[in-house]
Length: 131
Length: 222
Image (cartoon, rainbow over all chains, first blue to last red; front, side):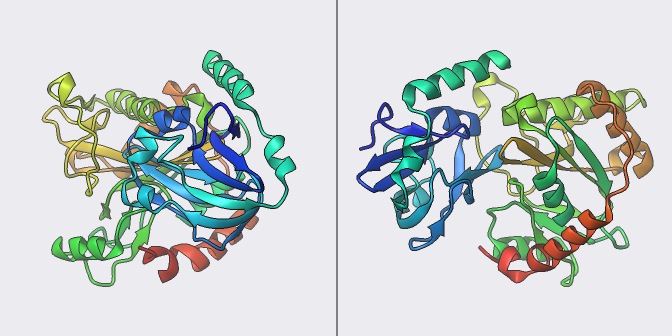
């Protein structure tokens, strides 16, 4: 299972867990708390090529719909059917069972350029104090 | 819908956009919009059961939420920097409070709805927008919902698409529009400047309408 402390993060709260040149993508615990109860996830299809920063899926909660972005470029290898069937997994297990998809990464340097866990925690603190 | 998405995608930082519009038609069965993840067949069946004409457009919104029957309602969209409030619950509360303030200045009494008991706030999805209030919805004293909305967050920008029923107020659409305009300006501390929508934005919206919101590939995607 991906370890949140080893994952990398975007400012838009997606996490990336890298193993070799493959990565697992999900959203952070902070994001799931902001989104609230997830009721539907519109996952992309395996085989799709994605570009860093591209909006690739939509998560809908009882409150709103949210665009989720590709943290890095590559190709989607598999999607998490379990989370599509049970969207609440995003809330109950955002870093483990609530992952969205697995992908082959074009350039692992794109992952390494993202925030590590400590930087992400600092970013969250600065966002919280700004509000 | 297309114009809303174009504004959402091209919004300047720290800028809010408020747009009022109405669906073309006679005021009965003009159109139906529904939330981004709803099933088209279910919406179609519900619209027919409600007596909407078979040729009324059924349009999937970019925002979440349920089914809205547009038959004389006041519809509006509000695009704003998400960081201003950052949580959907706060956004709904502040927008609906804004409406409450604007309506109050015109002598209309409304309130933000709360469930009878704090422990009864059970999350769930109302498939029809005005079938029953959700916490922080704007209601009359008798609890009937008069303003509903749905949100979309895209990057650092949010889009709220709202619908207000004019019948309970026995007011004109113009009167209600002015109430919302003033209330949102006051509550969100915005000084609005009237603007014409640029020609290129209208052209982009027309292209998007053609390729997305008027297309089965989008509306019947689920």
